[in-house]
Image 1 (cartoon, rainbow, N blue to C red):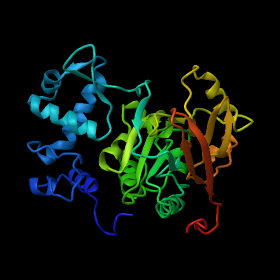
Image 2: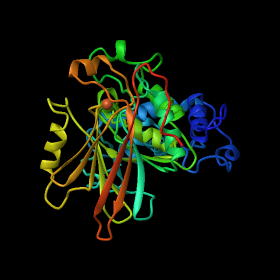
Image 3: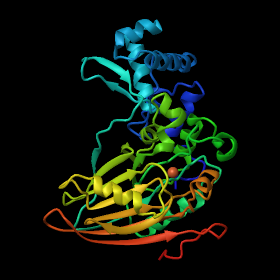
Image 4: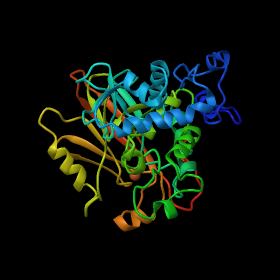
Length: 370
Ligand SMILES: [Fe+2]
């Protein structure tokens, strides 16, 4: 974990901006600060910053088609340079502002996440690799299992695991289901900005461990989805140890070229917990099947093979909620440690799973730790 009381660099930037304090160049670029921490625009007066960002976002949300920076600058009554800086900050903050391929130099606020899955190469080597797998942390939920999440990261560290995969729903989200605001969220977690701040602060951070993460429905639907905001991207911009791998799904390339794919599922789980994952495997075109499919969303754990694809249901870090009761799901709080033996031909020749589980009301401990 980051040392107690020390403000991590991305948090420092965010805190400064939130409080309208411009960091001096020396502080902003000090050696202890993250290289890609969100920049405080040098000529954007701090007092003026939030209203300008909000107005820029509103203009982009209002205009259905792509606009040029000059158009945005005119609409905001600022220079093109300041309009560009506002766009850069909004992007850093997790707003999905994309370059329009049909109109060079133009940008638009994309409400829907891109459909094309991204491929991220994992920073691993060798013919046997071990990864930690977590999902559905729902930070900001009243039922979040943060002590358990911290404990598994310590277990990962004790086992020498430097790669963790997170299958979506980092945050509790806002406006995802009826009654969430009143019954589902922890105190002070009623805005997506508060949840992003919180996740940035508390998500486990251990030297040498990188977490590869996708966004789930709780992250990018509801209120955030309506304004083209992706809280996972926002957290990834502030935390160098968390890598964004896509919305709803992301493919991860292993050292021998094989793929593990993370998917954040949809809807309820069905009578058999394997039903939806099976259907997903059956929908994959021939020749496009990953060696390992990791499913978030249903908050249950499972491990099985279907049509030569190893499927893993990732579990969660949130205790029973009203929503889960309604969906008829019992949460499985815990994480996986998975060792993959990689073949020379790009195949995965062996997969060994281990479940690290927790039980409601029991003391948080990791008996497997050496
Ligand atoms: Fe979830």
